[in-house]
Image 1 (cartoon, rainbow, N blue to C red):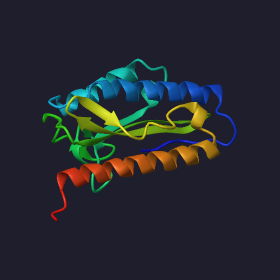
Image 2 (image 1 turned 60 degrees about the vertical axis):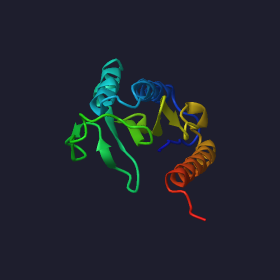
Image 3 (image 1 turned 30 degrees about the horizontal axis):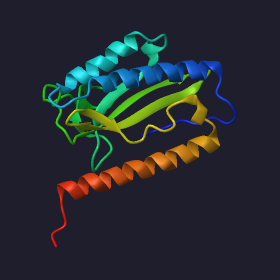
Image 4 (image 1 turned 90 degrees about the vertical axis):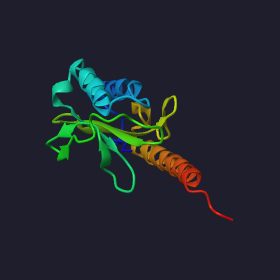
Length: 170
C-alpha cells in the first residue's frame, strides 16, 4: 500500500491526476474474483488507462503480496520490473493477496501513485487499506495518520488470515 502527501493543498492538476489513478484502481478491482484469469485483471486495468487523459504516462502493475513485496502471482509480463508473466493464464484463488499499482511522474504535479492491497475472497475482493485514497487526506499531517491507521488495519487482517490458515495447537 502506498499513499501520497503534499505540503499545503493539492493543486487542481494533482487532484485531476489522482482521480484518474483512482478510476484505474477501481476498475481493476471490479475484475478481481476467484476463478478469473490473472491476465484478465491486468487487461481491465490497461483498458481503464486508455480512457484517461494522462493514461499514456501511467505506470501500471499488478502482482502478488506475501513474504516479499513483489511475488507471485505475477498477473502479466512486465519488462520494466522483470516479470515473466508465467502466472497470467492461471486463475485467481480466494485468499490470494494482490497489489494494484498505478502512478505517474508529472513534471508539474510530481510523483502521484496509489498502490492498493486487496485480498481475493470467495465472492470477489476486500481492501483493508482504503483510507487516504482521496485528495482530502493528502496533507502531510492527514497522510501520516491515514497511512498509520491503514497499516494497522492491514496488519490485523493478515494476523487473522494467518491464524485461520495455521491454527495454534493447544
